[in-house]
Length: 129
Image 1: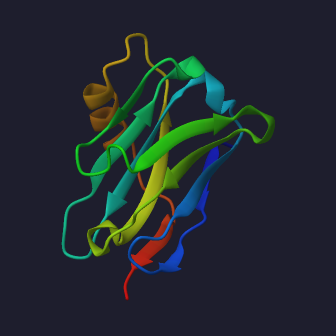
Image 2: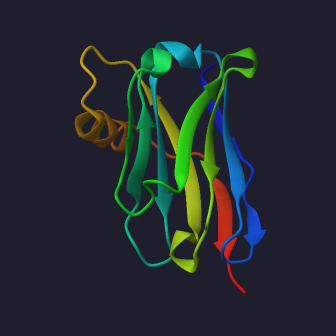
């Protein structure tokens, strides 16, 4: 059974950092693109970052570029999202998804991820003073 579990969220002050993890069971994450999504209260879910197989390509939306870093931990079959300089606009539930692909087009891949079935629990990130 394939399962992705997000963790690492919490309540932090503006300017703080958090490291989120997406842990996989039932599949080897390094064989798939992995995307991070978030849904803020009252807003639609948005894809914020994606990493290709083999880590050769990464993608970030403008609002998190230069603050967030996506990467893999092959030893634990996880994908992490290092988040720095957090601000209240980053408050959301964060989710991860994995998808096999043949050509790395992050927008297309993340759109496909978003429509590939029910979402997991996610992990809550709250940025507040």
